Image (cartoon, rainbow, N blue to C red; front, side):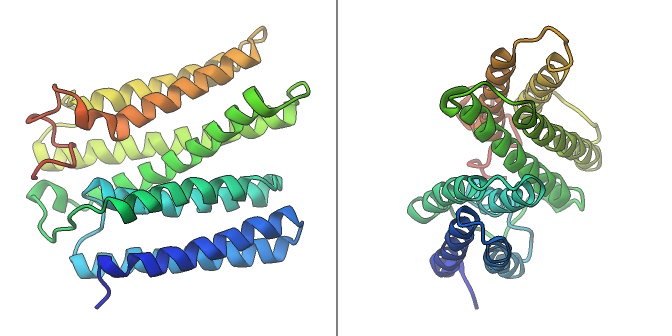
Length: 264
């Protein structure tokens, strides 16, 4: 039976395939870029699937388990962006970011228990977390674009480049909204109410509004492009606070059902 100890083998194989895909994108070998990246995704997802079977539940409970999904969705978001806009660097960045989360899981693995509290056995739990992880990955790609336009772009920002950033935010915000709706349905079934202003829920609302501010500010005719990009970077920092930063808040300790490090 495949266990957590086998993760390193799947991870190495997937990263090598993603690296080949990134190299092929730079060399403008598009078929190879698609093939290698997709096979890498299949290899990585096969580990997630086997863990799902082994744990007898979706691997979505601990931070280590959610990092698995983020490591998977980053190259997925990268290949989607590459297929749409043919940005050669996106596969390199998505691979590097994915490797960061893979290394965290390799050097600091968390306990993957089979047990789940009754609330996490809801059918809404898995889609809620999976959709959110995809939203985080797409918004991560938008953040990479913002960093590139702010600090590495030597010439004036082109409309096409800003359009790519906007489209990534639109997709990410849409999936984040769907994830929040799934979360509300999950909360209603598990605790009897759609929203309780739990610390995690509060920061989720703050993050959602921050991205909404970016979207609306971009529609202002006289807006300042660089200020919009800074809003996007701040929004991503808030997203990190929502995802894992709340684990360290005193207000969350002992009260939040979303703190992964606590027994559920």
